[in-house]
Image 1 (cartoon, rainbow, N blue to C red):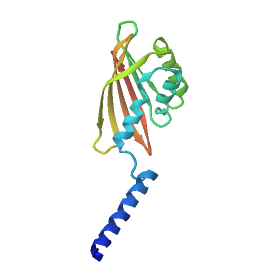
Image 2 (cartoon, rainbow, N blue to C red; image 1 turned 90 degrees about the vertical axis):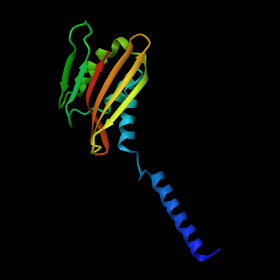
Image 3 (cartoon, rainbow, N blue to C red; image 1 turned 180 degrees about the horizontal axis):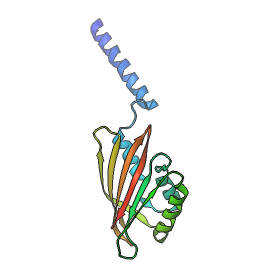
Length: 159
């Protein structure tokens, strides 16, 4: 085999080895959209206290206020509430109260739309979910990058 072919193969082998090592150690990492999709994954499935805690792990009112919008339970106008610094316990308490009637139900994802900002520092996620007892529910998330993690700044639920 000619020496230039051997050198080319050796160079290709080195590049392949570097790529495999980088992938295995996470240097290449997930794309911003993959990370946002991982956040959205915690906002559907069988609703339980653990599922709620997984979703709440993406909320941090000490860094950025969290706006929650929801439908009225009595048929009137919906509600909007903003949780600021120190309000995480209130947010969890209110979420548990609001979700109590549907605890144990499974919300199956029908559709998902993710729109990334041009700078990959923010995104909007729209989920259409199906519950056997509630029908379809739309969940919209507004997320922003905070260093290496993504934080949910807005949660809007509508029917």
